[in-house]
Length: 114
Image: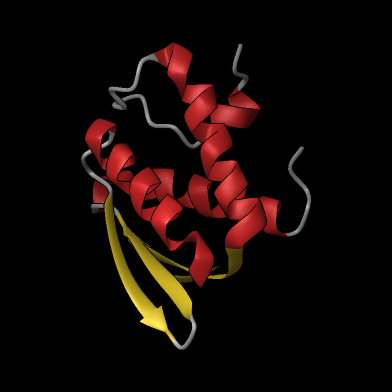
């Protein structure tokens, strides 16, 4: 069963079945832990992640599936040299979700999350 620690950034409005949420969180954790080179909080409603280029296909797939259950998310992809930048956007009413996601990414990239 998923704990609040592992799914705390998942909003109540998410339409993904509760039983599937820990699996999706694990997918994001894998992406964050293995591929995020750095993150930049551009604004209260936008977070940019710089990924290794070889993670682009997996990141695009995961982003597309996430928008399917949490339609308030916006994922835009761009390149920065040989890296890929994902801009994750949310409306002002969901900045708490982006805050929690940014914290999760910070924890994953510094090795603090189990």
